Length: 154
Image: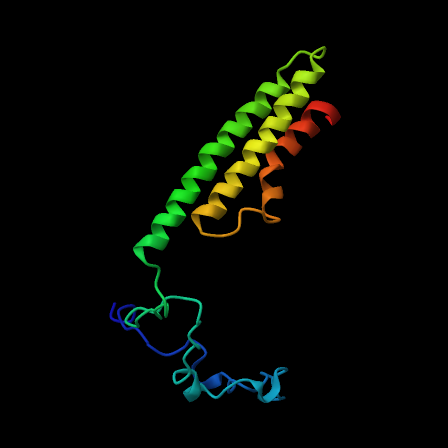
């Protein structure tokens, strides 16, 4: 009965295992000398990844943090653009539901939507103290362009 209670902490193969870098037949392991010795396995640490947060280390600070007025400008311009673009999107939806015989109304609503989109972008540029006439104004016409595609080509 005492035989089954005895436990051995050795590997079942005992000392018959070949060294780590040798093949069991006695030849060199196919990986050759590329495998590190066993004592170096414990000393190696993985390199820290610079794009990840490391607990205990401070995050690098931005040399010029945003001031309160900059944050207020961004919030105000975001709200203004979203609100005005919703108006432009509503005009595009109205143009899509116009009867087929009212082509003039559909075109007029799409033109008004493009103008409102351009006003939205110009408003954002003015809030950020930039010139309102810029290539960014073309971005404001995007809802009207999508509406024209849906109304006439789709």
